[in-house]
Image (cartoon, rainbow, N blue to C red):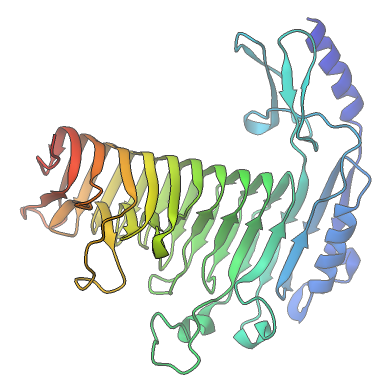
Length: 448
């Protein structure tokens, strides 16, 4: 009882703290989409980041705002009281005691800065998460001409770096206007003089902790739509990402060198992977994704240039893939080292998917001309459970593993894949893959 009373006493002193709002119209933004509003965004962010208040909010109201490449830098002003709260759904504050009991004590509690755990009474503790809010209700557009990036980092458009507790949301539209970039992409125009290999990403989140991207609609990125890099405790929820099926390298969300990332309840259709997972990754939860068109949900490619790979504890579940060129994919380069392990693909539905289940452990630049190397990324402890649907390729299950470093401890449980063309057979191919399988069609495939 004492901890709860003390907590409520603290809360009563907190909820009255002001939330400073920084509306970009107050900083001279035009909102007509014809002149550069970057300065207004920069100044609003500067004041919000330096605010001497518990919460700060940058507001992008209704209107159309032209934005040149920008980097929003942290760290932002530290909070005067450092305590944190493990937030439940809908802003509920939950406390857990030593026995693991939890109790919801307040709804709508503001979430504040702090990385420390604070104990109140025996066995009770909670953790606080800062809130630095970037609220988008309007439309933000990129310059349409690649020349606007001359002399700038052509890999980024809107970037956030070194921010704790960043919350980007608001039902706004972000348009990367990538059409001219696609027209000069080296991927589709390799003989074009001056073709482009590197193009801007709509959102980059670099070294951001305990942060969220939600309720945002993104279209037509020149390249990747969202990059999460060197971050920890990052949530993506209820976003929509759309670019044409043949737009080059337009991954929906790419994660690299990050941990404890959750991506949920989102619709992603692009010209590349809906979600791609790079190296130095652990504890990723991906759920309730509608993927397609695109290249599926991919782990890799990994191990290029003999790099040492560290990817583990990935859970991809409760999602639908429609018309994608791959489904549940793991791809590693020959000659790489390290591990991909503890991966689960669960409760997935495939609709006319090419290569619904695929591991390619022998990837190289020139298909069929690369000799198999003695080293490779070790793939182990991969679970495929409750996967169903239709395949547009004859080989519905294709595990192409390395002879020198075979895939091991693979589990297949309750899988039913049939041809999208009714009556046509599908097959399974498992090369150098060991594990167990139960109720798998097509099969059998794995070696014991």
